[in-house]
Each structure stands twice: as structure tokens, then as C-alpha cells.
Length: 285
Image (tube, one colour):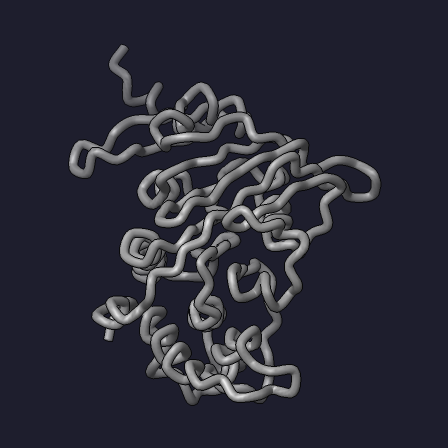
């Protein structure tokens, strides 16, 4: 079965709204995220973009309470997110981080089952819904056939999908993804983006993701948040945020923005020295 086929219809919609206001984060006394505010709505995909060091991943980790903020207000469906216990938060929100260990001696199923920890008792009590949730998550991410394989024998792309399956097995209404297409080949990048849209469109999940590929961001997002030097400099519809002027200023390199004539989607093109040289050489004198 290809990732996401058929099985997606069995998921239950359970989206939550996550909002953060006044988020300021400091490292070693220096602010790296400045007074940022963002809202993730059920059924929407919000993508954070910006150059390296702009604060995207730090802001995402702060939304998941993995990064301590100097100031922040966090709410999930109007409830104070900072007052929730870790277990309560984990039933509402899941985060796929960039850096995860490669466990040894565990099967794919074992790792995906980690996502069920919020539903088990303190001493690992019964989780009657767990096996079905794990099977659904593995089917959605295309790793069901690897269920009994040791994770130390997987490729980077396969392991990425296994960790994502663990997040889906958690069955939360908010899903945060930090550069989820890393290590994936082209097929699985596209299938992952399709899955993200399915989770939002068909199941009402509020999805927040960090992506480096601006074209992928434009294709999958309902809203884009553009960060530069720790500040949100624009937020809104992809066509309103991903303009040549804004992207050129943020990335420090000339970026052209156009529309793909076949799909009607935004397309971006960064212009380096060799691009300019090629254009000059191809221009008749």
C-alpha cells in the first residue's frame, strides 16, 4: 500500500487551535526570537519559512514547550497551554523534531508505539486503542511492511517516516513538523506533503511545519509565516507573503517569484552569480 492510501478514511477528526502570543526566546542572554505571535487553526497548514538562524525551529519548539521562553502566552482551544501537564499536552500536540537518536535493538513497531505513551498508565497500563492507532500510523506513512525490521537497519528516509508514524500514533489535534522532508527522496517528499494536506483537509488537524523549500511551502500551506533575524516580518496567504521583494530582503539574495503555467502555483527562483552569467552569455549582442 502506498503511504496514505485508503487507511486515511479511518482517522477521526480532532483538531485543536493552538495560539501563541508575545513569544520571546533567549540563548545565553541574547534574544533569538522577538515578540512572535502565531495561531494554528484546525484544518489549516501553517508553514514557517526563513533563512538559517531566523528562529523558525526555535519558535516551533517553543510552541511544543520543548524550548523555554523568556516571555510567552500559549493557549490550546482557549485553555492555558502552560498550565497543562506534560501528559495532557501530549494528548493534544505532537512534535516531529529534526534531531532524533537511532535506537538499537528495537523494531519499527516498537518505535511507533512510543507515540502511545500519553495514553498508558504510570506503570505502562493497558492501551486498548493503541494497536489500531499504531497500525493506522504505519500505513499512513508507508512503513507497515517494515514493522518487524530493526530500526538500526533503516535508511535515513525510512527512519524519518517511522518517527513521523510515532507522531501520528499519538493521535493529537495539533501536529508540529520541523523540516519533515529532510532525508526523504522525491517520491516520499511529495507523499508527505500530500499526507499533511490530508490530515488538515480530511481530519481537521492543525498543522505547523518548518520548511526550507519555498515552492513546497507555497504548494502545501494555507498560511505562510516569514521570519528574519528572529522576527516575523510577514504572515498571511502564500501569494501575499512570498513576494520577490520580501524574500530578497530576508534571504539576502535576489529571488524571483512567478506562477507555474501548468499548476498555477507560486514558483521561486534564487539568482546567483552563475545564473546571471548564463543569462548574459545567452543574450544576443
